[in-house]
Image (cartoon, rainbow, N blue to C red):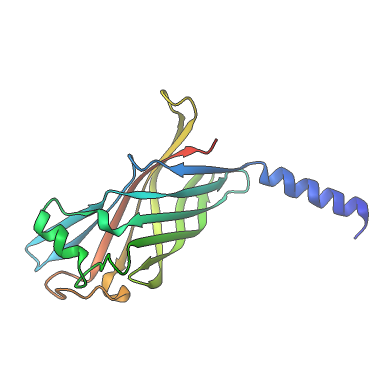
Length: 188
């Protein structure tokens, strides 16, 4: 490779990465929620109220990644007794596994819009592939913070038993529907 080719390749690489932007998760507007069937008679729903992380988007190259951390102790079913039980060794075992993580390795685009994430969920020390579908995505200039904020609605499904969360199976279905409302601010 000649110096001219090397310089052109480096220039192209730096130009492409100039479009990559990092967004910090807004914990006051981001809540992963979940639902599972209970004995076929109702659907139990809950959410996690403490989430942090970053999303990296390169809109020019139409790629991205995400690194999300969920505080397992922040689980909220809207039922104090169930919250306390979910934190013990029967379920989320928050003392031994205080954090649930999602590593989005590849964000897929349709035109200029992110539409899916291929990634891995780690829960109870077990890592498995979990893919998300992005049904809504939009970026605006935040009216109060005066910088770009992006929001999305994403969803996916997984089997909790694949992660060792076997409590009350089959009364509570092993299939879990995951929904995530997320907002993230462009990093300073």
